[in-house]
Image (cartoon, rainbow over all chains, first blue to last red; front, top):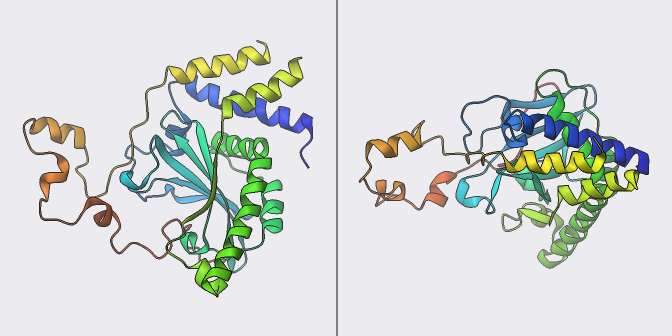
Length: 208
Length: 77
């Protein structure tokens, strides 16, 4: 459970990191590319994903073909929890071309090839999200961790609604496995987010 | 600097950033902007393969079964 103090810390951490990048002329979109010169559709950044083997968390950034991306979006992070023999997609975080996070989403099982687990477990994994990363991607990791904390209410709602949607689809198709592999269902749930408003809320509460 | 000012500073700094270029297809020229300048009166990019499949299909026509899957790891799978 995130306390108000933790939310303030997350907001402050996120502002500090994103401001530091912005003041040097870089966006989070740039940072997510890990210094790569070229941004190529479908390629992962970093190329082998950013992995913390000790915690089992990992993430990467990529873009689909431009004509398959929502307008104004640059790319998105996929956040994964890996366990022996299986992995689970936790949340997707889309950035715009200024590097602002603008959308959160969940995906169907076939999209990542994950073993889809119930929302309670996904939320538990997200609440414990922490990666010990050193080097140039350390700030990006901290930024992502702070973002997950700041938008945990939205994320919980999305993951719970994902479960409801897949269950309903399973009934409609007469088979849960068919629902999990339905190519008609890619993004299961999504919501827009307003980072600046969220930051203002938490940081203003502390200041008032 | 107050916290409100910090958020304002972030908004200001973000406003000064130029939009990051979108991803391009691995099949596209390495410098598509430069390539267009070499042929300023050439056809639009989409017209370069007038009889080819639509771009959307060509981008990932037989794409991976799990287009957003993480990299495979021998240690855990």
